[in-house]
Length: 86
Image 1 (cartoon, rainbow, N blue to C red):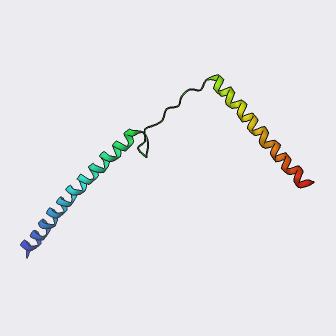
Image 2: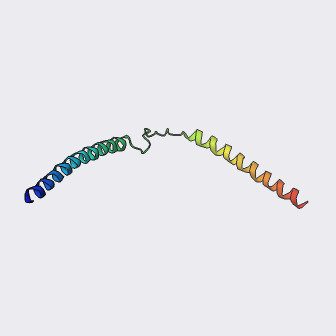
Image 3: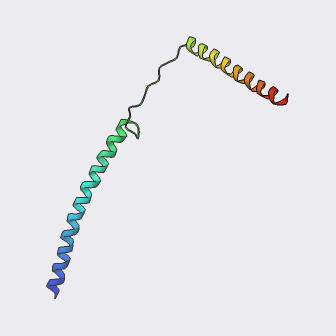
């Protein structure tokens, strides 16, 4: 009886060591994949985009267009309020 118990335990240990080896290989593969993703700089794998510097003239032109845009929107909103009151 002692031999059969010992054989069962030995067999279980052999199977568990095999399973541990398989799990260790999977963990290593996942860590490698995660390291590759992290080295790219983002979660989705896209390369980070660099921003171009905007010249002072370009900023002024955009500011001018945006002021006109918002003035037009305020005027349209004011027209809408006048029409609803009248």
